[in-house]
Amino acid sequence: MGYVRDNVLPMVQQSGVCISICPDDGEPDIKFAVELGMMVMLDKPIIVSARPGAKIPAKLRAVADKVVIADIGTAKGRAKFLQALQEFNDGR
Image (cartoon, rainbow, N blue to C red; front, side):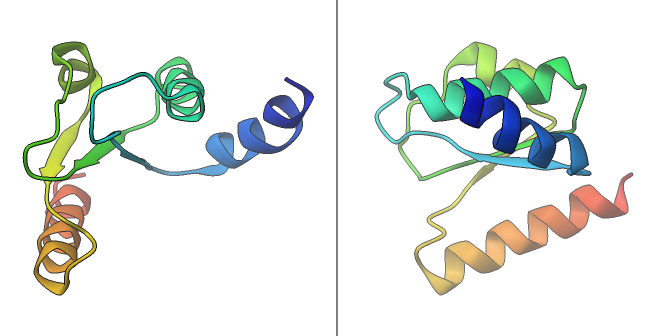
């Protein structure tokens, strides 16, 4: 946990908004879970990005300020994500 405390925590603390990429299969991912927990505990705005068809747990949707469904591996998906990010920023 030293790495998390010394490296990950300061990065999350300095972030204005946190973007999390939801694991495709909905299975627990330790890094994702730790970062998400930090975001929640630090009351950071959370944007969740997920591929079309990904399993997004209801509780994750509940804590997210915005959920973006897009394949960011494609130009169209990146454009959709950037548009959603801009809309999120405009609404703040």
